[in-house]
Length: 427
Image (cartoon, helix red, strand yellow):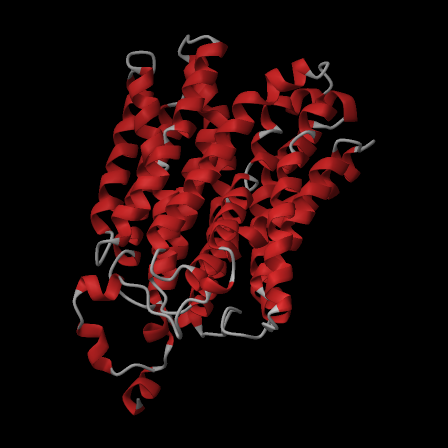
């Protein structure tokens, strides 16, 4: 436990990653780890975003009811929360690198096998397998970054976020034309994304082998440590911030095209507008973490991104066809709260173990928080037949998101907050 005087250091000192020992990234080919992280990040969303444009074809072929299709929409958040909570225990036993490698294998197997599913139950089960791989990788990739790149958390989170955004946009944009090019069968259109998982697996296996050959045990310092994290107000604020930004992101992915179509914009243009909201996250996701990591706290970015969202939702509510490209850009910028919260997770803990605990807590609780949002938005729209209510609800959610973000963005470390006050006095 560091002395209490540590909490009075300058913001820039607080923002600098502090680890229990120097980085050991020199033991590994640095470029290989960087490529492996980027390849893993690209695979974290196509499982979901490749399915959306082809869902009607999947439903028709498998005889999937509307209720089950709705369940399918809720499966990602449920899996991210459930399997994300299990990730630290697995990492303590076999190490984060081994768990991520297994995650890439699960993504590859699940995506490929579900394209051969003959029924709804099997399709859902195999989708859950792929999402389990996504969930554990979601949680542990920031841990690996903190462990092997402790002085470059910002740039590496930027690379990770940019690759994730690129994978999200790519799958949404090309799934339909790719399926058409492959003969029009949705099974090929979904199964082809297993190739990305296989590529990531090929890159992670040498890293795993090198780790084992050097005799590093799973219980070493890169495995998650146990902290009474529920005592940390920063951890709770981070979880709330994560959950509310995820709510907005999932609603946008699910409903933005329909909002534009209901305003009279054709399907092709509405799809392009949705693509803009996702593509704009690619460059911003690279730049934003670098800027955020240089500051003692990230409160300025929290306020700016929330302001973009409020402006974008207001434009969509009152003049959706008036300046649709502007609203798409503003909403896309607001959704860049995701790379911001990933950066803050890496900065709010002193060690890789602390990052692991904060990552699983913030993402696990956050994804649980995000589950009701899209359902409620759909219910409001169905009840009113207009988008004023749903968009007003989303704008309103940005207020608590901003307040929680302001708390989470302060220069604090969860290890300090998680210690019982009596223990802090003894220290």
